[in-house]
Length: 359
Image (tube, rainbow, N blue to C red; front, side, top):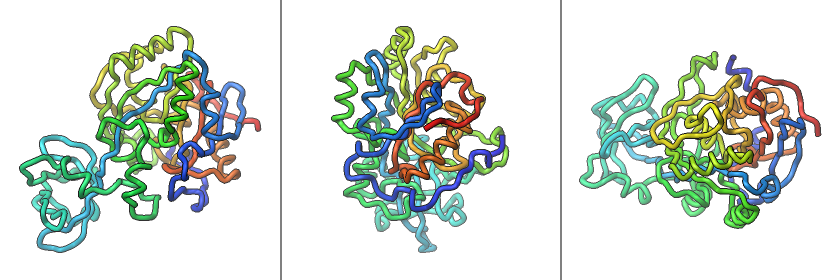
């Protein structure tokens, strides 16, 4: 497969720059793979698509203020560090901009020089390893000096009073992501209560979103791309709840591509999962046979992205791109602060199919 097979046209004015005033007022495009139909509604309709005994699997990772601004010591040039993951005490893997000024041996001064970060390594993939010269832990300072790591297609500076809250799910708990698991941004406490009241299990797992999720593909052949590993955890209680749902013949709904990747990473051939934690570099593309996830709540993703490829894998490339065309025609809001899409009744072989949906 070529990367350009996952391209589509999107007017720039459909890229959401701000969240809606109310999270659950987003629109919801519903794609039923079995019936090959498209429907339009509100996110508030989501509970009505769930049935007693189903499981809704959410990613409870919490976004950290991972974007740091400073200057290179001795050069006085402004630089940006985006922390990706902690690899040791006060030792972090990060992206640096502009990277050409940050070779090993350079020092970045943050917070008006009060905090120093030393570049100790530069990798071929463009990432850097930095060591913070602190007696305590840099994580204790991030809430004070860090910025919300909004993606680059949101063409404005972060607004702390708003983005610190809205670029975070209401159920976020485990600190560690450097980008939001955006499918969960639409949930409110009232929607979660309505879902629970319908007899639906709400199951928590964790995947800390890092470079693997948002790294652009720099190859022409999809098979040549390698996912950057991301830390995940599927607790025993969560695995038990998923397995009981599967064995009862009920449905598992993954909230977001991150939850889907954890479930498939931990999947057994019989559709159940085993608990575990570690790192996953699972790259799901069309042709992948899903073992657990056949229903997915997701946002609208960038062209040529690994996220769009996963969505095409679960529902079929032609069907998904047709749904995206419909979303563009109907003026849906795209990407992190945009609207949502619910994929229902995907078969294990759905990603191999083609054809268009009916209205």
